[in-house]
Amino acid sequence: MLGVVVAVWLSERRWRARGGQKGTIVDIAVPAVIFGLIGGRLYHVITDWQMYFGSRAVKQPYQALFIWEGGLGIWGAIALGGVGVWWACRKRGLSMTAVADTVAPGIAFAQAIGRWGNWFNQELYGGPTTLPWGLEIDIDHGGEPGVLYHPTFLYESLWDLALGFLLLFVGRRFTLRHGRLFAVYVAGYTLGRFWIEGLRIDPVGGVDHAVTFLGMRLNQWTSIVVFLGALVYLWATRNKDAVEVVVPAGESPDPAHAAGQDDGESPGATPATGPDERDAVPGAPAADAETGGDPEVKPDAEAETVADTVADTEADREADAGQEKVAAGSETEAVPEEKKAR
Image 1 (cartoon, rainbow, N blue to C red):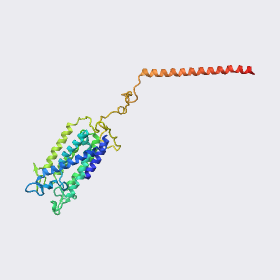
Image 2: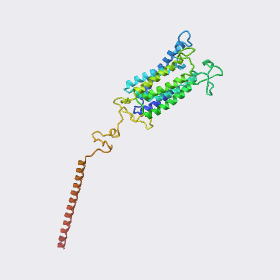
Image 3: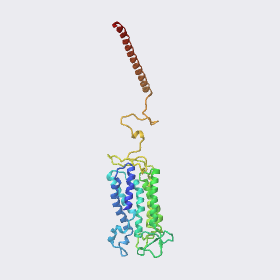
Image 4: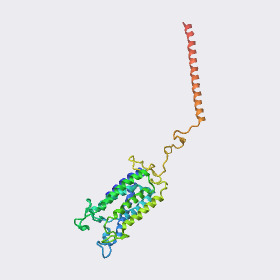
């Protein structure tokens, strides 16, 4: 659950940085987590069905429902969790690809945290090793006294942690949209899962042995197929640049955070526009296209304006001069009258 909290927190910040509304990721996470838990458990039970059903079962059939005992397949969790995200996005009128790109780094960090549950359960470890960081496994969990095993959960945790930071960097550096950043996450995860899976000795698909095909484990083949699918998606959407909806129609976007988690430069559901278009006042003249400065003024209109100003100034000066002459004449006439009175 700690991984889910971290993923939702980071994804919420990234979503609001794109102009999305506060609380959107939290709302989407509810069905995504529920569907993801169901999908992860279904994948585990389907691929390891002999553990719960059949004559060689080591657990009771009803224990297939005990999620807390471990056993969640990431492939099923992502697949069915994606259905939950699609349903929530469709209901809110949002672009699912925008949400997928937003949550991709958070999913990687959540997996890095979640893998430590394998340590507590002493499960999904690798073969024997003499490396100093080898892990001791109890006899009850399949280990042998004095033997160290590859801590494959640790390898995958570190891989996912590095992948999460890589996604943050790649997203900002290349502004990957329309699900391309999520495809990078899928490709990166499956690349690491392939070689880590090769070190594991847990019996996937069997009771006391792992099901293999052409010398590779089931999850290695799954990694190959999904990895190729991610590459195909990246190629197919390389030129896609349509508008992605991050704010439902008729609602206002949140201002982007100053922290700068956004992968791109144009928040909201509208295409990026220049500063003059964003700040334009309805009815005002357009700005000069070449300089981006003040609205263009025609030369004739400017000349007429200057001429009118000069004429008005001269008229004012003549009026002031006339008033001064009248005042001077009045003073001159007043002097003889004063002498007569004397």
